[in-house]
Length: 228
Image 1 (cartoon, helix red, strand yellow):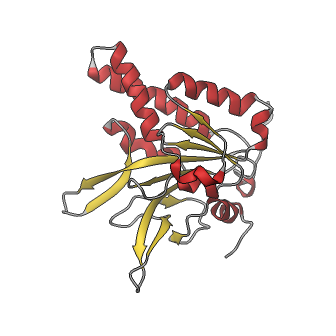
Image 2: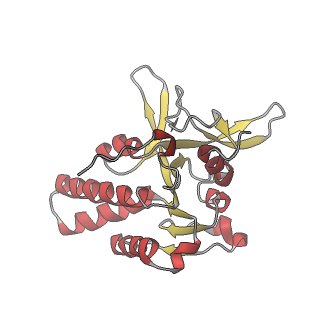
């Protein structure tokens, strides 16, 4: 078989943008779905009230079977082709559902966590690798005090191994934070690179350190369609 030579210039061009965003309760992670291009929401948190006026389509994810069915629908159905962005809100809650199922079928807690981690790893890779669609993964936020005394905020999922490894799944990992301006007004931003307080990264190299929470504009910048 002849070796296929590719160019990094074209890497991911037709794959869609896959992004993980984490933040505190009420930060606006669910609301962020409305800023994505043609979104369809897979909701596991029963927290869509903030999107009531947006009239966005969604499906309820109550267990792992619902999520598997949703994946099949997204990747195989004609109806799903009209949506450009799939929003999983949130993977923290989905992981909790998977863990609950595993605990119910196993008396060994360590085995239940191991099975949950394996299933979530497969699911995250499956949705991350959907070709031709953007996928937005939201997650809860975890607060950890480091040995230095500093507080570090990271995505939060059940199980230490899954929490520590979640960042490796994505090229884009953002923290949804609030910042006060000089007048004391609170504004929301997506932090796209790590500092001493928040874990974040932007492997595209196209984003500012702080970006307005607008996924459509961010996806365009990553794709090279917007310079500002």
